[in-house]
Image (cartoon, rainbow over all chains, first blue to last red):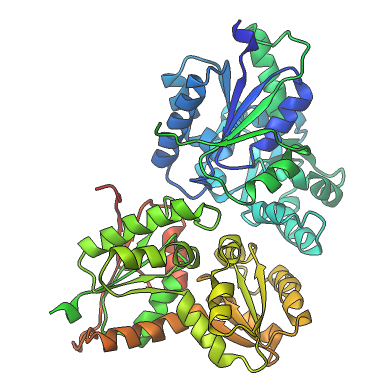
Length: 268
Length: 268
């Protein structure tokens, strides 16, 4: 039965595991095959053509593993490759941008939406375009915040320097009087408690990982692909290169030990 | 005449251009061919085998371009590939680690040496091993400082958060009473003024880029390969992927506009 097949999820590295965590929490009976393209991380500073090539290779790998749907858990890869992947593959394909955009449209009251993300995501204009396409009267402030990923990876979540950097970034948003902020990078959910304490109830936060899991549930239901088994799903993790820090970070992102971890080559 | 041939320099990205800048200042009549492997940056979180493969591909590219010597301007690539490159290629090959180690040995008075670098460089233990091999009684403190590269790339050189982060990192070194600090990453020379102001005259700084240029001059002289022409050398820059920020960062690192910039594929 195809509903028993796993869900494929990929990202350039470890970040997409925040999406896996949300899927595990929301859909505990689903199995997941995760591919972190750690040999080629980060995608944020690569060209659109290169990222598209990588995304096609990875989706082909996941399809060979017989997944029932593919989640592009990387903002940059979603921005540059989701349309192309949908042309090439027939299984349901979800990106992180649409769910975030939908949630932001629901959350905003004054129509002033901010987006933070990596340089690549912000420069791709993917969030900006999708928001304006849905609602052309929105006022949008987009800001690249490249220090946040290394702060998360350093585990300086409660460090005063993190607050100082977050304040600098968020003040630029507050000055523009945004009412809703999209966390447009899969690393950022780990900073959510700090961001919440800084913006208080002035600004609503939209967490892409969380909204991705909600969208996935809807898509699986509409395709009759939700796993009916009562057993807990399994998560298998593949990487394109072993890095000494992957496991440490992966367990921090998933908030539990990882089981199956295997290095693979995408050419094979 | 082989002395008129250019010098090949490579790094995983833009960082090695601090080495190019030092070579241009010290040896203005030399031409340089620089290869930034921007499609696969950063190397710091990749496995030794993967980095070795990349370094061999790039050195082959530079040798085809008829360079008279190759400078590995990347600490991680030096750590994992320099010995292998010297087995495979016959032209003079220099890495950034030996010159930094030599300068640290000359600078230290009390034999307590600190090293800061990326996670990859510190985990490779390359500086630590080379220092201890030269002088087994040294006391060495090595610290990965992964926030410094993005701070440089954000151009937050004078930002209070940079001082706060530098203080946190440097205090760990000061507590260990080091007398000499090796800047073991090609991005760090841009932070030298801030680091100097924080450590004052307590600690001597060893800048790998500067010492690399000194070592290159010695090597070229000993091989009779110094260019005797009185014309200024030219610098050609190749990248494996165009990234929108490369040019901005390159000009900041070189402190002047870049001339020839071309994307190449290493497989060709």
